Image (tube, rainbow, N blue to C red; front, top):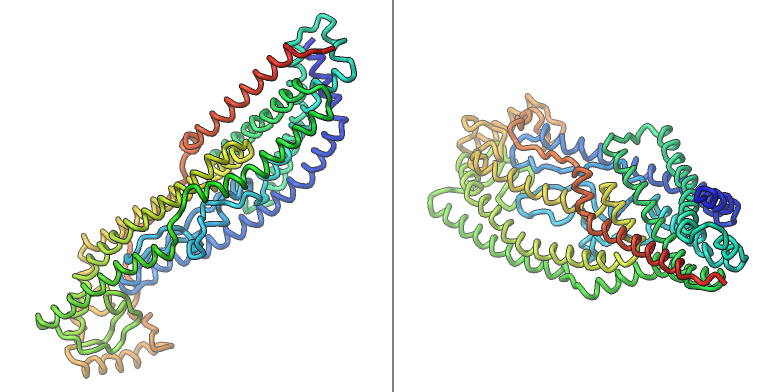
Length: 516
């Protein structure tokens, strides 16, 4: 008997305007969002390849250790074609610098914006599915009971041997069966497009995440079906039911997320980034004073700075690459870098205390908005989808934490290995080749020009490149699916519990429903 009700509900739904509109939207929105998602992914992939080559060149084409400041490149997830998350608000690269730890992978903070506050109306596959599934859920369920009552078929059906529970379950199952063709078509379109896109390749783990995205789509759809059924069981006409359902739909999808963002930003304030920059500059000024004292002390100890012959680049601890310069200046530079660089790293840690406090404020603001937005199932769906696609806040935070850990390890290696104490840190010349006087340095420079024939004043290719094979390299792997699901467990459990409650309330309401 229940199968008869399911079949009847399915056949009735597929000829309704709601099904036709939903299928039309599917055939228009899904290809568009996937196509634009693929184009965006390919652009980021091209940027990633360029940045990776540049990052490799830093290791392979540096002539002194002072030039080897690694460029860390974030992996680009092919799953971003489903959900952009916060990728448009964050950067792809992080350039490490011993003077300061990276706060974000982008410079958007200069605009005094929170990069974790994604655009609520950003159109991608997930956003399209959010609108499509919720709208179909409303259109399929708003008259689930009220229409039957208006037509007189509900009283007729229940007057036979069909129990109310059987009738209710059959109606619900029929609605879900109606959705399956649309959902299957959505994902078939995706895989068909991907088959003709060589740049997009999914791993076994990625397919597991896509499956979880499909299951989450069913849970999200169920919310609006059960909500529609609940409202339908409490209204006497389909007209009133559709009005209430559409009002709640608009509120949950459009009004609530934006209101939550506005409210969250006002509840949880973030310090002005200009104030942070001012405070860190004060710490830098204290460091400059210490550096000046060190330079005076070195002069008093007999180290003499008599000038450079060649100096390519300049940093807080002196020249980056120095050539053909008298030994007294070279020894002065070596000793200064040996003392100043550990202090520079300590100064970086002092600034990080302030930066970390600012970052925690940003995290708290984002979490406040997120928790308020969780009143909307649409935002839960988008947040879980972004986490599954490696484009959510958790992925960015995990990446940046690992980058900062790597920075500590990398520059710590310089201290432990005595690189800051060596001439190799700032000159490609061997210690035995360093001239004793300015005149000898000029002679060396003239001889070098005749032999090497450099194309420009600062063309030092003839000195060769460093062997950087012993230097630490950054390696990053995306978090496992289980970890991402665990981070979203609260949201997943919340929406499932709400769905169960709505289903139960709808069922109880129908059991008590007046069919007269």
